Length: 390
Length: 233
Image (cartoon, rainbow over all chains, first blue to last red; front, side):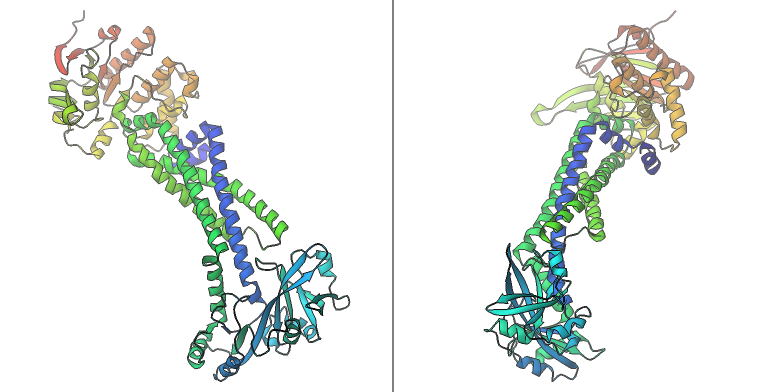
């Protein structure tokens, strides 16, 4: 390692030699950086998982424009939209098709736990609004009181989920009505529910008697091929007289939902702060290590100054140490972080995973944070006065 | 003038502290040191000999007067000039100040790397040679923590000399050495003066060295009170 670094720097790798001279301190410093890395990985993992879970319901549908109530900050919350706006929207020459979707929460009481299912009611005669994965299952939904279930529902044993097929359906009661599950699809539990269930709008309305077919939760629209959804949405905002409605392209709705979850919801803010705290912990740990190291070697640095070494030489040593700590701390950090996220995924069934993007971002962040700590620590170098050596 | 007299001090005054605590340490010192000579600065503690040494070695800023070092005026010199001049000097400190994480050879190499040779093998060879000269050929790969006080001081001497400095400034370089080692080190400095023209200015209380000195300058209360050249047989 020394030879490699000497070849890289074109000088003796003093930073490396200093760090490895005190192995216990070096190990503690690496553990500190790794700990900060793990903190950041866990927070980022949860934030990523929240983003994945937030966008998951959007994957079930395909649309170009979505009309929602003013308080609908996400697909699974907010007030209703009058169906008349669907008809009015279709007056635009570039709107080709529209449908209303219903959203509600249902419970499936089970022996060990009651599962919370976010349920969607859709028009089973309009396959164009369903994702390609769900489209083949549409025929099932045309059966009365039938539904398809998210096979990744949290708390539902895998084998039991796999057993739900048209030949071996499963049933349960919702508000006195029996719902029969004939098939499954791949969803995944989020922060709001254990899983998803999709049914026809008629089944939905029978399970939620207070809801009216004239007031879906969202209106989805398709535009003519080649038309710009944002431009059409802009025209619809002019056309529709209820100015409180949120009329956005489907892509924009997804982006705004994600931004809302990450920056306005307490959970998003907390995990965002968690990342910042992890970074700050890392900076403080590395600063502490480097500044102690500089203080311990002041007389040696003063000697080098007396010998004529310029300031950039000392900065080079401190930054060399900072980068070594960053890289050596990152390696155990990414390994432990991956293990923790895997364990958390097993325990919660949330979409938690280490991604390449996360690893690269954290590595770059670690290098930057360690360099920043190094830059702060170099201020102590000023105390190395060669005149004090005599 | 600078070729034959690499150190030329004129009307040097120096103060420490500020305001009412400001105290003058050096009073109107004049000193010219010949090339290749071994000059010993003597005097009681607090007489100002170390202050003069650090001023001549570009380790302190000159406040008043003039020091011409290797042809360059130090009064008002900037960092760049000071650093460039220091690279032409060798320092031997009373406390060896070796880098504890570097082996004896690596410590000596540091005396060469400052010149930016960028030839690790040549550096190692020169360091090996310098350590052999101070009798440490068998301790090259030892860390300072595994060397005795005298051995550390000899490594520091090798580090100061390995870059072939024009001037060596030494502060009690023999304090940690036994009589024989001390005399060997001073004899080596003397020989360098004769062979390469290396000038040595040394602060010492060690009377054993005086017989090797070309010149003995004594300071008291910040002033030169005697300046003699020992007469040899």
